[in-house]
Image (cartoon, helix red, strand yellow):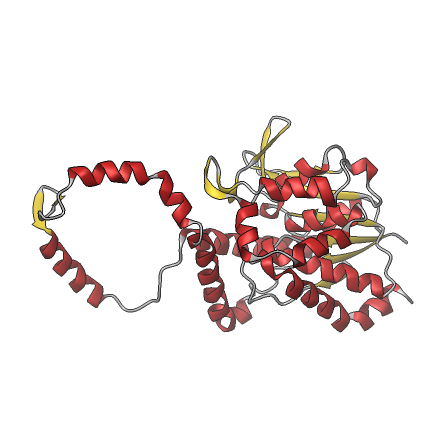
Length: 334
């Protein structure tokens, strides 16, 4: 009997996969084929190449500032970060060059941005395929491949159980990292999610000064034109108001608005929308293509950019498998 392991999407939460794999191996589970989506593809490629330990050692040593440097935050076409250093690291240290050379059959999934079709990779260059699978919309730039622009596979197939079946698996263990978005738990999890939003904003704020340098020269020119000692006129629909009058009107309007807390930043709007999308698509796909065992770590306190928490996340993955150990042994080892 062939056992397949489907590793789901989840950005920084994906380091949990390392702990899950290690715990499964300690139970004596022999994984024969592997599939992955997004960060699941990154970890899956390392595992199928026999280099999971090397990935673990590197990931647990990352600091928050190292993550920022690796992602390459800036302004570029199609995304906020390049992430090229991360994928170069995969190619050089954690993965064999091609799917054909891997120790275990491996496949990953991406999405054609123009047609919405699922794109499966199971041959050819691994690093490019994984980069396409990880290209979170608006965060990473899309990847050009064979005449198509590809983005994160989580848009269409966050936990690719079907790829394990296609690789010949008789029994599939799936790992879903986005199980927290469930209606019955939404209110309970609201505060955790707001805290994750704050942490995501903080991450990108740390790179704000670098971005401001891009506009420093333009701002300097503008400041030469404006005299800070003069009142600035604001023109709205043909009317002219002074700064002080406009400020008084604004303050009055703010007093009339009920407090809702700080508005989410653009990255949090994007990430939250993608998490909701992934959760809904995952439930739909798993209902139609159910795995034999579903592992769902609870990761409500982990922000999407907290890649520096690998050590903690690996332990969460191991603990989750340990809680399910008896069920897994019963189904697979009897």
